[in-house]
Amino acid sequence: MDNVTIEINNLTKIYKLYNKPIDRLKETLHPMRKKYYKNFYALNDLSFNINKGDTIGILGKNGSGKSTLLKLITGVLTPTSGSINSNGKISALLELGAGFNPEMTGIENIYMNGTLMGYAKEEMDESLDNIIEFADIGEYINQQVKMYSSGMFIRLAFALSISVDPDILIVDEALAVGDMSFQLKCIDKIKDFKRQGKTIIFVSHDIYSVRNICERAIWINDGKIITLGNCEEVIDSYEKYMKKSDFVKAMDAKIDATESKVTGNNKKANNALVIEDLKFFSNVGEAANEFKTGDNVKIELEYEIFKDGLNNIAANLAIYDSLGSYVSSLNTKSDNYKIKNTLGKHKLILNFTELILLPGIYYIDVTFKEDGATENLDYEVKYRTFTIISKYKAEGLFLLDHKWFIEKGIGEWLWI
Image (tube, rainbow, N blue to C red):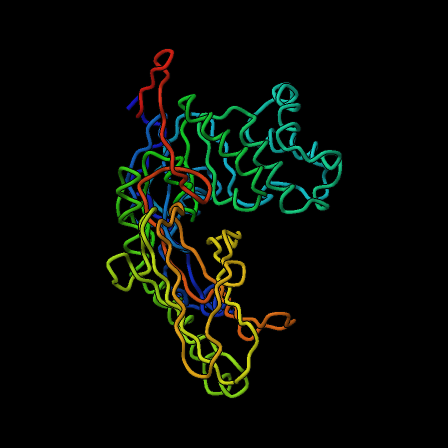
């Protein structure tokens, strides 16, 4: 038990849900104490331990109970039943600007939050320079927090959380707000905490960040633990579930509805060219939309022309990651490839001999345009999605072909 940092036993959190605000008053005044609410189990009988030095990721869709669990661990909420025992100083980054007084300056909020976390003024004096340096918000540190952008909020909040040298660090989705350079800075700091043997609880919808940082993971769904264990195994189970879940099906239905709308008769009647379909195929010719890093991938793009005499049509496929970051753009004009411009249906094929994207969900925008024209013939945003999977742990977008070697001596090389 000495190695256990957080012990959770039969933890349950129930909220009362009322259909209308006035039902609370009715319930209070009702002579027979009639109930006007129904119980919502945000968490339902959770039991597990987190050991000292664990880096554990918590996975689950929105509303699964992840944030509620963290708030119970940090003492922001009290459980309906069950118990939580923690051993060590906890520093948590739960919500953007939580605990900050907007009328106070950054400096004043540092001291106020430090006091709330149980640190003496002398201890905060010693940490102040490190906090200011890590936050790196310049003169805004002396301005009222209500003037801060969301990025400044997160910079100051994270700097405060990690600079007080906690035993347990909890991060809940906060890093998604910061810019890329600050995210990398935070991840480096989290990894440094990991090397020091501190306990880290990391919540993110970005499963690839979880995979990169964590060794263990918990998957929570509807307030219950579905599985707990090795990070890779939990992520694999979670990914398979999400791909089959009602949420994904609903998103697919939404995309299909959009496609049906934009490719309907009205569009065909008014457009000279219409994008009809886009399909993905594996290297064995099977239709698919999930591939491994380095796979051969074929894309078939179908379009139909309704107007004769279109001049030098160019097709463009732009790839974006799940955060909307621009990955790559491929254009037939740039590649000096002429496509058909006659009336009727046509198919354009694009082959990736080795798609080196790192794991993630990617979107494709499709554009057709005449040479020299200011308007597109047709344009589809997030027209199709595909998924890349891999066991390889890395940050970024691409897995570059590489080899490591050890220099043994002059003229001798040992390849790995």
